[in-house]
Image (cartoon, rainbow, N blue to C red; front, side, top):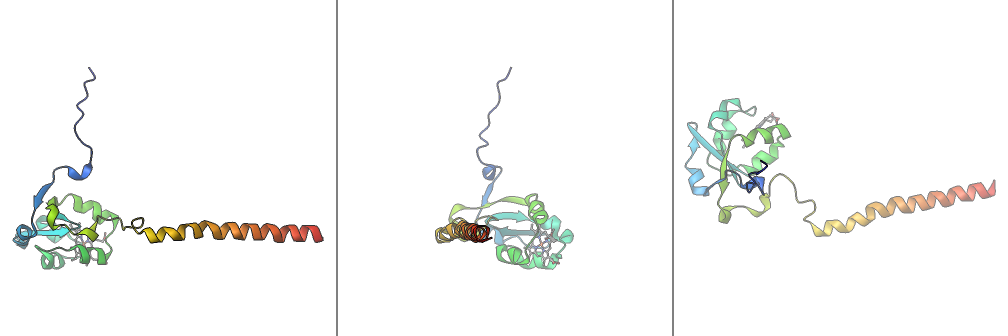
Length: 143
Ligand code: HEM
């Protein structure tokens, strides 16, 4: 009876995502109802206010706002990033997302010019290796 129910779980990002506008989020900005935007996701942190290790003031200050920058400036741990998943209530509508906010991963690879330095990273060890071999052979042949 292996009729597996193949749901369309093609992407984890699309699961249970309600869409909000920045204006909608902005309405939730007091200690009874605090929403914040981080990396284009919307979080309801009301129940987290007095549990936040960084204090409730900082969250209240950001209530209704996009807190991506202050959040990243603090350099939150992986634990914190996992924790925030449980407060996620949705995402911003497509039109209001910020481009350069693309999730946690920095765009290491997106920068095409950076790739030009990758050949240097293996060329240097090879040159050093060849040089060391030549020096070694020189000593072996002269002694
Ligand atoms: C849902 C969102 C958030 C979660 C789950 C969260 C969670 C945490 C956690 C677990 C810590 C302890 C340190 C660590 O593990 O990194 C922390 C510290 C802190 N957080 Fe957050 N945070 C959130 C949002 C924010 C925002 C929006 C701000 C700033 C506006 C902020 C400011 C701080 C500060 C100042 C500290 C203290 C850092 C320190 O003492 O070195 N957090 N947060």
